[in-house]
Image (cartoon, rainbow, N blue to C red):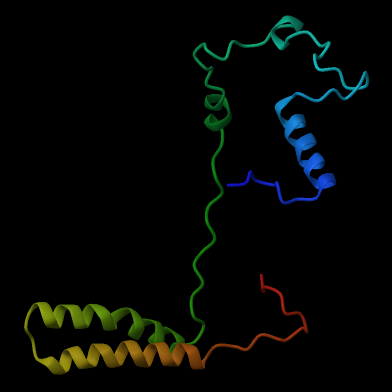
Length: 140
């Protein structure tokens, strides 16, 4: 069984060996890049918190005075047909569920399905088309 990379040309094999030597720290890059850094350790340069001590909760002061703005109001359909369409979509599934749980007449379940499908169709039919600006990107 051959070793990985043994079927590579000689120059590529040397390049891979140099990469591996560089990653393992075995390569000498010269005086411009010394192996040891001449900087002192971080703790010796001044006051730094010990990472092993209990952390100080810095978020208490930040959150104490913050109060989020009120959310914007939900949009309401401006016309009566839109309101009836949303009401049909919202009332259809509970009507089907209640009809089946209480063993009422099956025509009420059919009415619930018809309300849901009809309301959904009305909402889709009333959608406004977006202007095509010639850009195929996302609409935000």
